[in-house]
Length: 414
Ligand code: FES
Ligand SMILES: [Fe+2]
Image (cartoon, rainbow, N blue to C red):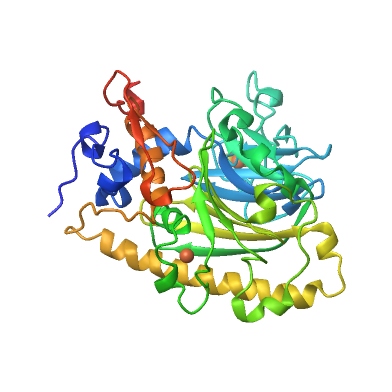
């Protein structure tokens, strides 16, 4: 039976995760199910990094907003009167009630408890009943702003005021993906799923091809294609597939293909990029469209999955778009359903007291990277080196960069 360590910050627990792929083990099973490990992830990952929050074209007009619950933190994202997209803690400055719910368009946020009113810029505009409160100045009681930056029309938030810029965090990703012209994409559909699984199980699944012939045997074909992972700079990884046509249609629906993205050059012109944006987002970037899988973790056992799909403006403007896009949606509905089911099945097994670490196939290099990216942030100290040989997915050279220091202590002790 497995034993959950008292101290999840002890680097010893992750020693075998940090070996080269061919020798490595998976993360211990309790990393997917224990409350202690989840708390460590919240403190050292979700509260520190740039978290993906959808696209700016989901809120095109001033006053458009959506509320999210991310890793236990209620947040509201809104386009203000000047057209700027902003994020605020979704917590009233009076006695803390959540001020916004769901999504919509509004001129102001009115707290449902005692009706304090906040502008789209977060300023407290009205607080009836506070006239006799000594020294109370509305200017000091605006909503707490949360850092928000964008790349390519994608929204990212960071709860840590001291964190590096989004540009630093993403490294060379914007350069590699520039020819998709992501800022001009139009989101055509967003679907949401509530999953009973740990967020890491889902993102690991999204980044490995080992399961294609089994989980997707009736949907996604395993094409004869040249593929590989490549060295990158920044908090992302990519699998590149070289192939003809699109990867966003089932084989039986190829005749319904929409036109290619005209601007593609270099590697993007040759096939598909499957990108993991650490920690919990996958971008599927193929020759005619881009989709995303966005995870909102909610404790060790629950994850909200958002699937967004986007196409170039000129494709969406075509007379036959509505007819043809149905076949794309069919593909995503099918493959996402299959991945959702297997992730929940996996979580049930991983949650057993008899679940222990497993070994990895050469077809799972990014499962190994994800485990090490997570371990890096939990234990600090030695940092895993994600450099590898682009042409040898099966014999990836990975090494540990030795640096001094042991594990990281809990945030509360820092
Ligand atoms: S808690 Fe919001 S107005 Fe009282
Ligand atoms: Fe899958």
